Length: 342
Image 1: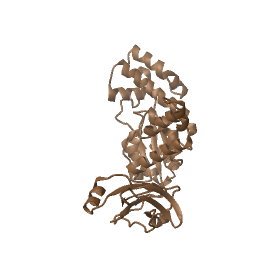
Image 2: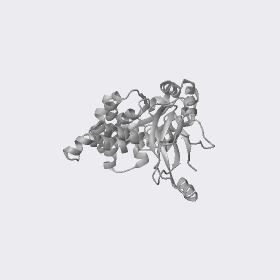
Image 3: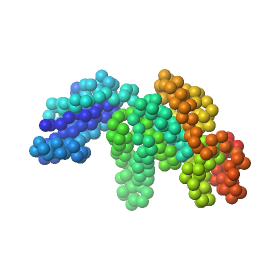
Image 4: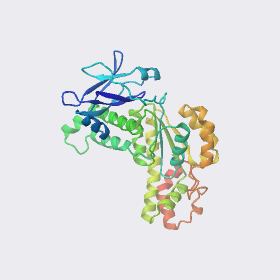
């Protein structure tokens, strides 16, 4: 019993290995003489620990990030071995090839803007693994942004954290989390809200080939849908208005720093799902998926149950003067900026 390779993808490999001299083993992933990555097998997992204990030893799992993405042929040739022993680990019997080329998609937007319906349709058509709303990016992006600026630290700590290696460590951990959760180098993440929008540039720095699809929706329809689902008093109404405007304004600020993005309106997806599907499929580099995606979007009708469908004028809302005043104050400038009628 020495260990096994469980997964080899274009971007990483996973498996487990026994301890060496009573300590977690240092593992190397290689293609011939080329070193793809290294890692310590120190990730504890109950089934591995139990099997090792029965065999009278200790073992732990490893996740090795590659320093470049590899082809399917190279995936079959990758070997993983102990640093002090070049004999490769065997692969598990149910070893499977990962998707190639990789496809990583982030669906962003304000809540109640059609992100759930688009995420569901995309994952069904593309067969990408996903976990719905992860809200994981901001776990790394937020603290990293604060720490590298030295916020809340003394000058020495701030100066140390500002060094490039700290940002690199955060990027590495973010990649490990996304790859590990999805068990693949490809995935779809549908996470609406301001924190995710602000985290988009960080995720782009982690995954430069990632695709970002932003959905926006008329503010009147969006707030109607939010209030119908979440309810609340005038304070909640104000918070929804401020959040809708903040999402669009933050998106306008961050989108220029992304390598690429596609921006769509929820209303346009309802009116012409075929055209929306065509744009999405071309952007993702999968033009053959345009037709099935169009059918899926037409059937699901993107937030058809939302209270704001077809209602984009203040006179159609039934809001009293107080709420109309709140909406104009918090959403008015952004509505005008994006060409929406008040």
